[in-house]
Image (cartoon, rainbow over all chains, first blue to last red; front, side, top):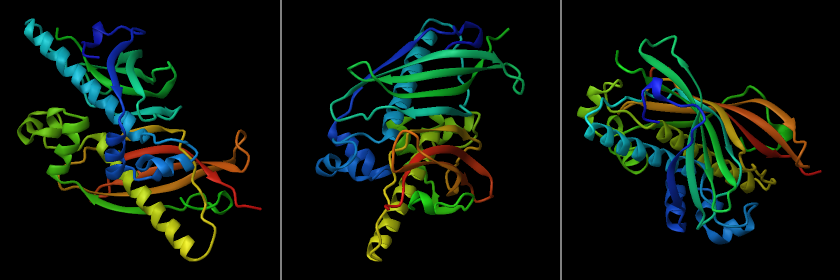
Length: 159
Length: 159
């Protein structure tokens, strides 16, 4: 995910890391951005269709974003330390097909990974390619809890 | 957005409200979930392709989520106060075609609205319909900064 366009390999998963969701952070995120009872309160969650306290879907995506940014910054530092030019990842125009497939409950550990599923040169921006990336979050039981396809610009290797 | 399936009208926008993004909250969200330089630091943002400090795209979506939840809770309270049955909005299976079209800079005021663009009865869940909703955020200049299509379950009116 931090490569020049030419070096990006389709179909090779990158694992960003794992995160265990605590009740405290689930509630803190929900208080600020998604104050629905099943994200805020154990008893209310028990009465809901979820059955137990679970994280806001937006929270599960924000944690992925954080892991990906950390990963890219680590990689960029490694590349710079090796004296190589550091590729820039451009802004993301957005994403498609975000699916929250299973609830993320308190204590669940989600492992996030991304796989480039397509790449092509950009028609609108010289010097850039466009990549399609499939990202998934899996719980400790191996079930996919969230899945999303995103697109991003990737810089071409300087001539 | 808080109606029984039968009462949901296609093509009628609901305005949730407006939010002005401050430098403090942009940086606070970025520190936690999207620590890229152009979301954290004015000088670094000036050197980036954005030119100025701007909000994480995830932040612009989380603010929308908060406004929508507040709106639904206000409406539910009004309906309950009128002695009417309160419809349940089911979990969202996800969304598609999220586009971050323009940056959201410090001081920008974004107005969020949603329009139901399609509805049908659910095949998998008796007693529920499925609605497609187009949500947009517009800045003070009337430009669309974010656009997303989501799907949600809506309860049918009790017989």
